[in-house]
Length: 94
Ligand SMILES: [Zn+2]
Image (tube, rainbow, N blue to C red; front, side, top):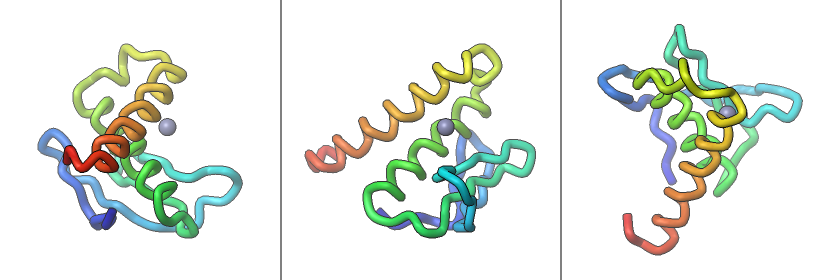
């Protein structure tokens, strides 16, 4: 999947950057700046999964769900969303 440099989420533009994040951090969404940072060394399916995971964080932020969801539930939801989209793509549903 090609990773675009920006993505619009519920009317808000997010910049997408590749950068060295260090440690075991694959991706991070910076909400005030509306930036999604993806670890520079990621590629292939791991990159796509991380991108989709971070997109769902941004979606949860913009729709207000983040305010009412426990952080562990947010993480689980983001992982599930990313895996679900990947499975649809593998089936060529999308
Ligand atoms: Zn996360």
